[in-house]
Image 1 (spheres, rainbow, N blue to C red):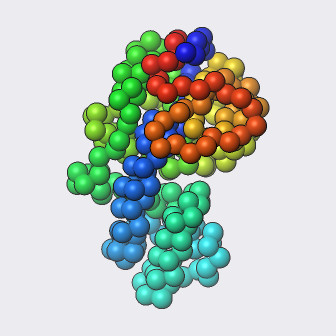
Image 2: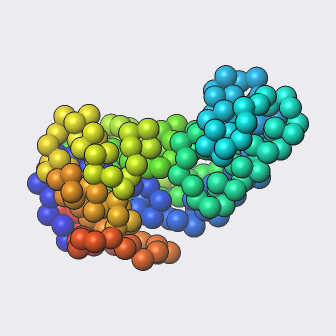
Amino acid sequence: MIVFGGRGILLDVEGTTSSISFVYDVLFAHARECVGDFLAARRADPAVRAAAAGLAAAAGLPAGDLTDSDHLSRLTFAALDFMNRDVKETSLKELQGMIWRGGYESGELVAHVFDDVPPALALWSDSGLDVRIYSSGSIEAQRLFFAHTARGDLTPHLRGHYDTTTGPKREAASYARIAAHMTLEPREILFVSDVGAELDAARQAGMATALAVRPGNREAGGVFDHESLASFAEIVT
């Protein structure tokens, strides 16, 4: 049990609110299957073109146009390579979010959350806590995810979202920026994640921390000891 008397809760997604297997076996698989056709079909969309240009730069590819079949093939291969290696690249995450939008809106994708998550989010938000998400997935992808869960739309319980545009999840400065944006002292925020290095960074920034222990999670790693929990019901506010 974790007794927390602060004013804000910041949550990771993969391995914390939701299973790692859903992210890798469903979301990533959907993006891998659709990325080539998506780039070709949406090549005139400015947002898609911008994400494609960012991805090309990150992959070390020369600038090109999506109407060029060779460039499109190289870009598709780069996206697949980054996804297979789980590279946390902002342009790729933006592209994935746009791909997933179609899947959620068609009903092909329904986001998984652990059973304890919806009641905890409702309890926390109803009690006045500022609950937000910090994930390597894009902000758009996060909003889509929590709007289309198997337990319904959970976005009314969330006041904000952060992604890698705020900064890397393993750097203390990122958590300091989030605390400042939330207009709270870091010590007033509890960060929950399944990754020890992320928790270490949050602790260095002054936040309270908790390690999520969920089915299928990997070894957490990290340097500091963080109190663990198997359910959000173990957080007493």
